[in-house]
Length: 201
Length: 203
Image (tube, rainbow over all chains, first blue to last red; front, side, top):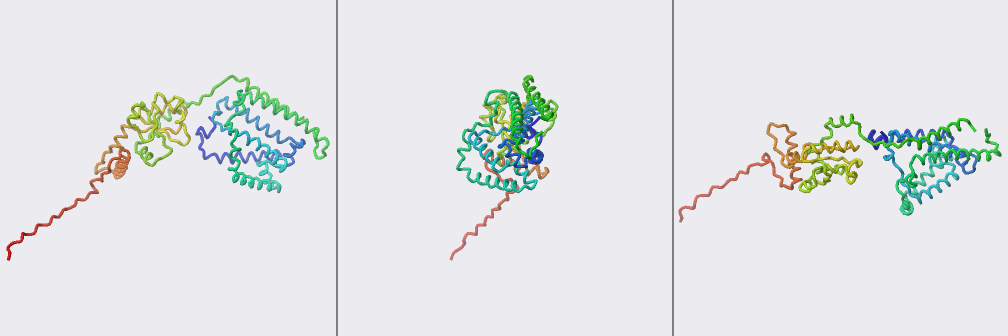
C-alpha cells in the first residue's frame, strides 16, 4: 500500500499538507516533552537531564520496529522509502558542529522554533542565527563542496553495510536504547543528588 | 523507577524480538485482479495518433514512445525518438529502467493496438503507472497522420481543422512539400492583348 505518494495513492501535492501536519505534531511533542527549555537540552552534556536522549531514542525504536512490522504485513514497500545518502566526512563534521551548537546555544534547530513559539528571547536569537548560518553555508558552499560530497556511500542502511537483516538491526538498537535509558537514569540519579532544583523520585 | 517505564521497555523488547521470530515473507507488489479488470475496461489508456503526433512535434520531454514490435521492424520504420522494447523482452531487467520513470508518460505502440495493449497489461501487472497505448498503432498512424483523407464539404469545421493539422504533421514527419489546398488557390486570368492591326498602307 504505502508509501502513499510513490505508489500514486495520493498525489505529490499532498506533500505540503502532510509536512504541515507532521511539523505541527512534531512541534507539539517537542514542546510537551520540555524541549523548548534549553536547560533540558544542555543537560545531556552535564549529565543531569537525559530527556533528549530518551525522547529521540524512543521515537527511533518505535518508528524502526513499527516500519518493520508495516513492511512485514505488506502495508509499506520498504524499498520505496527514501533513504538519505550518506556523506561520511560531512556527517561526522556536521554532527560535531551540531553538538557544539547544542551545548552552546541550548537548542537544536527544531527546538529553537518551539522556544520561539512560546516567546523565549534566546530561542528567537538562536532561530535568527540559524538563518544567518544557512545563508553563509549556501553562499560559501562552492568553497567546501569537495569536502561536502567526499566519501559518498550513497543511500546505504546499517543492515546493508554490515550485511545483516533490518530486523536484527532493529532488535539490537532496541536493546541499546533500553540499556541507554537505564544507564542514563543511573547517571541522572547520581548527578542530581547534589542539585537542589531537582527532586528525584 | 516508574513501573510504567519498565512495562513499556519490556513491550518494546518483545516487539523487536518478535521481528526476529517472524517467518520470512515477501510482499510482492501486484495489482489486484479487480483493479486490473477495472483499468482494462477503461478506455482512458488509449491515446490517439493525433495526440502522439502533437506531442512529438511540440518536443514534449515527458513523452516516451516504446515500440513493442520486433527489432527488425523497428529498424525499418519507427516513430521519432521511440525506444525498441520487443514485447517478449518487456520483463527483461535490462529494460526496466525505461519504465516507471517519474513524470514520464509511456506510450506503447505496435502495428496495431492489440500487441501494444497486451504490453500495457503486462506493464500494469508489473506495477507501472502512467502507461498508455497508441490507438490503432502504426497502421492508424499511416492512415491518419501520414496520408490523411480530406473531409467532405458537408463535414463539420473541426474535421477540417484536424485535416489541416494532419497535413502539417504529415509534412513534418515525411518532409514532403506542403501543398496549399485548392480553396486558397485563385485563378489568374491571363489577359492577352490583342495584337494591333498591321500597319497598313504607307505613304
